[in-house]
Length: 456
Image 1 (cartoon, one colour):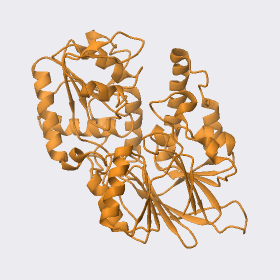
Image 2 (spheres, helix red, strand yellow):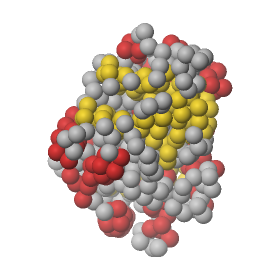
Image 3 (cartoon, rainbow, N blue to C red):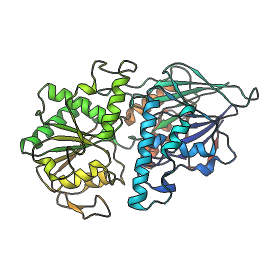
Image 4 (spheres, rainbow, N blue to C red):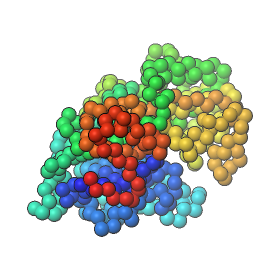
């Protein structure tokens, strides 16, 4: 068994991992880095030289796990691509949207490599995708005839977003479990993750929140009440609330929370505006409502009274003549996104509030805004003037990732012989490695380096 991390080492982004098991080459995820541009955003494809990829398994459809898939397929055109049934329509939407973003960045930032692939390229690879049901084993062909035995794969609900899965791979003698992005606890929409009940020899586990002691202490119910109180405060003084979110997952979670609060009269009945891609993915959530593990299968996003943020809601200060709540991408305030543009319009007005509800990378515009003192100038876009931070900027813990206590509990419950730590900043991975070694010295803890093959 051999393992090579192509990205996602000491950072959150460009997540992609090559695993060789029983002579079969597997690629676990194929992401891009959301804060880098051009070739710098891709995983280390050169590390795949002289390797084979017989199958690609996608844990979920966030761009940091999916965005480089068409690029990989240009070098390896024959692998089967496995994902869950809800992930297939989501992946098509996400990849097509990525083309549009790359075309815009080529024009605005002069990134000559963009786009890496076209809309036509995506349509041409769609036939390679195989949508699988949760909890049902499937064969992973080696493509080597009888020289290598077929592996068996199983997708287990990861509790992260619609379609997300932990990937269990059964070999001839060894079993591997890759968590992908995982959430052990229930969210408002999605139920908590399901994990293997069998012996796992190798566990490949994410570490997104493992440096945060605060995330472990937060109680979801308390955070909902705190969000409601802060919304009431902003609306009460005539301001509006901006909630930057990821279009897939966070948008649906926040809309469900806002609807519950509005129904119970915990927040004022002001208009709720949603950016376009968030609405698109909400429709897919509705489509699979009865086919996935939902906390409330009777809750449909089409029944929530929202407006689309677009031509009828122009991106200028006239948008804030009356109080409203705006749920817009991106969750980290990346440049040239609706949330970034709106934040620039709102940040200097003390009536307004900007509320973060998910993970913020330390290098992101959102993190810079959150941690800056009141009255300090903030750069939202290098090509535009800075803005003074006058409005309330608050963070809430509604992450769709397991906190560090849950990650340690997972390791203890599965009792693997080896653990590989990925998908986390260096501080997160270092903390987890030390805690596992203290918890069970018999477990071999591995911190991979990008591009370096590890023989297991």
